[in-house]
Image (cartoon, rainbow, N blue to C red; front, side, top):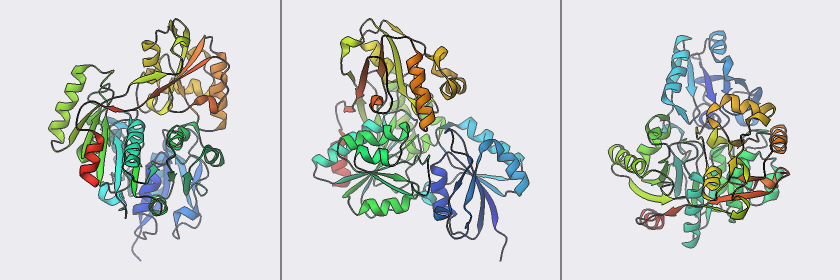
Length: 439
């Protein structure tokens, strides 16, 4: 038998497992020695279980911290390292490539053809060039349109398997009880709950071909709800990519966001209502240069709150979506926009009051500034988030997260929740594009 090529897959609990399942599981030409993990707290020092790893790995596959990568390459004489996570600058990717090459291994990026599954049903993919562009409002908008057109749409969400991987192989969510039953993190609930509120079935998990086959049994159309700026796991019949005029230039400097830009059939320029007109113009020029066949949709993301009078003149704590602030690189979100729109007197800096993992988040992402990221990768971090909020002297709390954080933690102060829904500006509309492309 020929010698098997030794592989390490660099990941962050999602794309890495999908790439393994698609390209290396049951493939006797390769031996995957380990996954490495980064970006997400507490996902290393686990194991990809035998149930998912397949017949070649009866003991499973270890998941090691990325800090051990070079040691692993040298100690196991690794032949190839497959980079398998997203929303990182190009310089970062090539820095990792240089480290891997210097240690003696080949550095590989897998392409769309190798990693996409073909569905038996039409697929609309919602992706982005960065975390925090507005994928979730776009996904909800497309679901609403499809339902109005009489179609049964099922959402399949990009993976966030932070718990027991074997139990999370295939997950189906239709109610808040399902979120509790699957012991979801704040980050998972932020993506699933808004769909559940609109009576849309959501699938997620680890084994995405198996997930697709389950979803196909109850769907007329599959909607891929992407994560970070990753490319779709499924071959899209309609590929929609969101770009952000608050971060012009990021669409061509972050991996693999530019890939989504180049693959897209339609491109939504989101947040035009709060962006500088010059940035919108710059994005349109960039899109027309790189993907001249893509149809551009102009869109706003208007901000509303429950009780505007609670905010005016008050000393406020602003809580924003965690991933948007951390690896998304944003220094503000919907909460800050609401504080400005409704006349907050002062935004309180949470950093002096942050504890343990929340304080560590500020150290790791110093650009965040006077905002509190809603970090909740597990029960202990949720408790630390709650305690941090309780320590902060403010009159009220603005919740800028996609979910109602009050359902998950106790907040001992008056609160106001921000909402935002995508609205097209002019034509073409998403409905017109969907009818033309799919119906």
